[in-house]
Image (tube, rainbow, N blue to C red; front, top):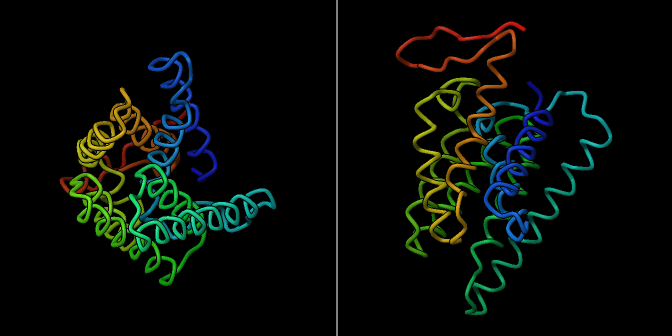
Length: 214
């Protein structure tokens, strides 16, 4: 399934979480951002999240994501070098934006850049003493080098993603972030189960692809 479809599903999951957990929508963007990123994260193992024939709109989204992520990264670097505290939301937004942009490209250079972002995220987590951020960084660094629809497309990643979401929820103090992250990731696996290739939910215990034909 195409990346933009997973993104749309993730946004819908986040919007539903925002309505359920925060009727005043004060944290709406947090829920939507967490769910959207989670819905795309499984495809960090792929050579291309979107079709090779990207539409003009998709190319613009990629450019905006990359530039937005670079601006956030520059702001984080400036604040760090200037001795100011770095807001976690700004750092996470920059990482997510750059990853969305980079996962729309392909090749070893793309994989190396994604891994570099993962190492940077893990380093930031180490400096801040954030275990979940270290875990997220390691996942980001590791995933690009895996076979597509392999380990990142299994049921075993869901507890890990829940744990990462729990850490972020505790840091942001926003109720429901953990379940939103897990549901966002689950939505990706469920959606891919509806495709002809299916998903190896129990890999590496079995290489059987589970699929539902509509």
